Image (cartoon, one colour):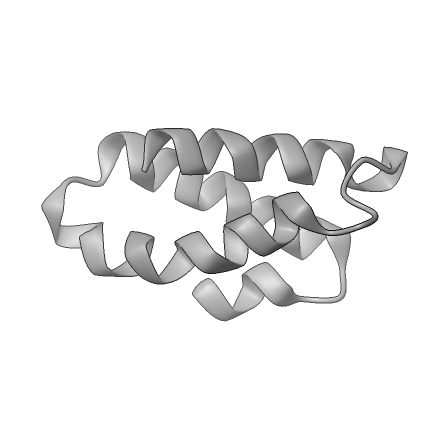
Length: 70
């Protein structure tokens, strides 16, 4: 699950960021390790030079939302 946050396909990264958004809000302690492991990759997605490009906009928003909820 975490490794897909670095996938080359924007659709895969978007889906994975959304999954961590949901897990961060509803997953509870059982997913704490996975969320902790995902944080550096989510920060990388958010800080990427092309994160504000139109094709990455939703992916970046999902990553930001996931970080907030985690």
